Length: 85
Length: 543
Image 1 (cartoon, each protein chain N blue to C red):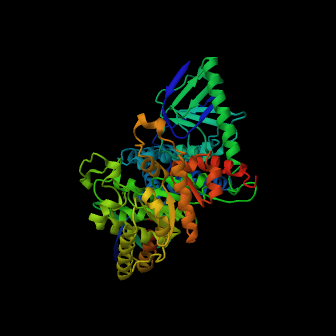
Image 2: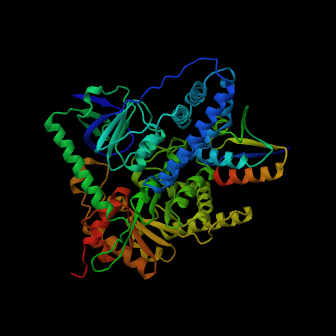
Image 3: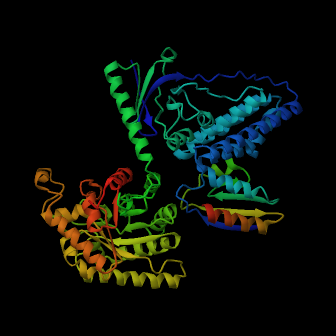
């Protein structure tokens, strides 16, 4: 299991477009990928789950990758977050 | 006559024939004796067709007038249609023996309700997207044609609400405007209206009776009003205004992409004055050559405490990136005088315009300048950024700023942060003192930008906020024009450029004077870029 934290810097937060990009990338991996904000948890492969976190600028999210290919998945998630959020 | 009030999502006036759209309601049975396998198959087929359809809308939006960002709406809709939470909900309902369409409707309503209950206004508006997607899947499951509004002649549309897919399919030349009783200014339908430049009013609450179909309607976005069957005299006023607006817009749009060049070939840059990073879109839309004055005050005024380096950096970076490779000139904070922020804890002054403001505050609180310069330097790594300092009256003040800048650069290097070491630092010429010693200042400043509003009030000793003095406030006073001319000459002697970012920049009666004395750049509000270009292109300096 690999876990890392990321602080959202995009002024609009996890809105529809970056959520979509994240889902598209997450779907390419076999391992389970979750994004947590506070006590809320969303599946990174599900757009509704991600958007319902309502993660805004300054919020810290915890990303957990667990299972096959978790290292590559975590690296990719970091990249997508950094470039879009 | 019918009159409705709602929220404007775009500017302008539209007059035309009203077409009322009533969306057909589809009956869905709630029986629970279906074969789950069969219903699953129907759902997957319906969903596949919907995704193909959304793909085609996406391509259509990309190819058409609607921009790439708006095309993303359909890509997002497709993702919602394929979402596993959505699918899980549908499967659970089908397992209970419900029809595929009942399951889609119910799951769509649940997800839609989840968004509607969120406090965030952006997320709230996504409820309409979910409902749109669920509705489309159901039409495909039931083999109904997708909901299409057909428009044969130019008209104004009214409905309870429109989905983005309906609006994007209408020939925009025939869509004069639209009105919805529901919806919100944050909806994707409203965003489309802005992108397409269509006058629209949403959330009127009240509807329009079907009897009005085919009658003449008026949309007045300035007042947020919709009128049907206006008396002839009033209608004519609106018709004239709509025509004038359309003609002016067309004439101006023809200037987009053309150089700011006089008939005899003299060029000048026309940039924009903006107050925050979202205004940069307007600058781009009006074809500005860059941002000549970005007032950073809003960061301080809209905040309850001193904005952090990080907060500032994000705003600056977003503007710089948006405009890249075009130049962006950001002015350091100009708080004080008529712009007050409580947390600065400034004393009340009898003469604030001549008082403790902008740079003068920084001399006592250098950390304000250090934080802002650090944020600016970091943003300089993302595009073409210059900084200008307001309210300079002497050479030593400029030296002080340049020393702070050197300190900030050293600090950033130690932190290992990327920045443009050569980011130009220029100054505002807005005091007569600065104009008079501009020969000295030109040796150290990277450029000058003349702030004519303050320069006028300081030169003439006329308070620009006192209405009684309006008559004697001669904006073309020879003393003022001489100071401007001196400043330009002194800058050019040192090989530096000069811009004008005050109100005089858009004074079309002075455009010729500015060109003749060699001003390099004029910076005006976005709406004045094209009118100014029109003026420049009509001048001939050889005569």
